[in-house]
Amino acid sequence: MKTFINDDFLLHNEVAKKLFHDYAKDQPIIDYHCHLSPKEIYEDKKFRNLFDAWLSGDHYKWRLLRANGVTEDYITGDKPDYEKFLKWAELMPTLIGSPLYHWTHLELKKFFNIDTLLSPKTALEIWNNVNKQLETLTARKMITMSNVETIVTTDDPVDDLAWHKLIKEDKSIKFKVLPAFRPDKAFNIELSWFASWIETLSKVANIEIKDSKSIKAALRSRIEYFHERGCRLSDHALDVVLYEAATDAEIDVILAKGLKQEALTQTEIKKYKGYILTFLGQEYHRLNWVQQYHIGALRNNSKRMLAKIGPDTGFDSINDGLVAEPLAALLGALDETDQLPKTIIYTLNPRDFEVAITLMQSFQGGGIPGKIQFGSSWWFLDSIDGMTKQFVALGNNGLLARFVGMLTDSRSFLSYPRHEYFRRLLCNVIGEQVVLGYFPEDYELLSKFVKDISYNNAKEYFSF
Image (tube, rainbow, N blue to C red; front, top):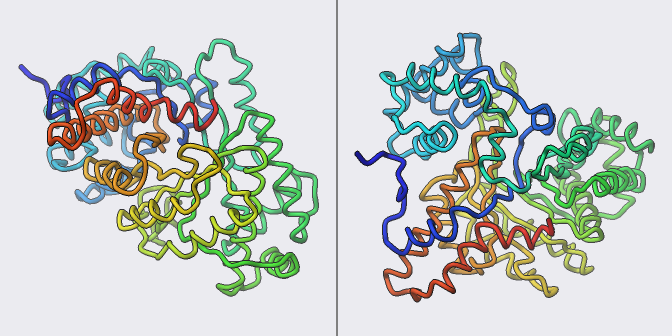
């Protein structure tokens, strides 16, 4: 009997099947943006059961459990692990149309060789089977069996990167684990914890931060600290893109107000964010880093649940703010002095795909293929429709062939089949182009195309 997750899953023509099986499937993975814990990698975390490995921190799943009427005690509360897992199994038959149905069964197949569909009837059988395998299937083994070559974590500038140092020194770890510089707390001056974080940065950098000169010196010292420990990427959550040009003297006044937690005008916030982001971009350019802009999330919409269980728990959405003019101004400020680093732009609102793709072509150059990238479909767009739209939009107004491909953006060690999902969809889209006569059936050409997007482009772009 043909299983649901079979060899030709999502591959709807013979060209797609050949491209995936012969060229894309076995390419190594460079996961250049994720939220895995370096501590858990170093300690080779062992999971107590399937809930711990699969559901304990996955707000993608939590959102749909809530939508199905499951109460919080079965999601983030104190119900027993198996009862929480059973609620996920009960949800499965309702997930037609959802990528989570696909990811669930890809992960069961990839890591545990389970073809059985998850449902209330099969939940106990799958629970017992997986828990037995998890006695020996640890975090590092999950990474290795996924053919992962490089992992880039997401790290606070004040982090000492001690776990990364231990990983690098451990010769039994065959894959690379590198840090990425995530300085959101340095430029979100309007948030309540800004002043306390700046105080921590001052202590870590051993620099009293009181004005524009000192905050730049502190951030530069941390960038160099990260660089010495293998960092070559930064990441910024630009939920709303804000930019306005500012002088050093203006920033001195604005920063002083921020450190005292005084009210700031919208213009002052724009000036401060633009100033810090421009400085950071200049530093990345100096060190040949890649900067990433994640644009368009509206976070913590339920203030009640934020107060109850905290951030990153599934109460975010797509934002609809306009991005073209401030993003053009931010990139333009770096381009004006020829200090624009390699940049990846991700937009969470699909409305902005063509906006970002056409805008970024204004800043290509310097002899670097694909210097400014349009990042993979992200978060709410990790779906057949979202990924396909991203491929088509990039092909229409950019160079799909130069695309650096997929990432997990995940906190789960079981998330690597998302790369397979991406590669299957990519091969299917290309196969459809060939079948329709839009592209030649030239496998020397096509094989390079899919291997580059799956692996080679990222390898070259990030200089790993």
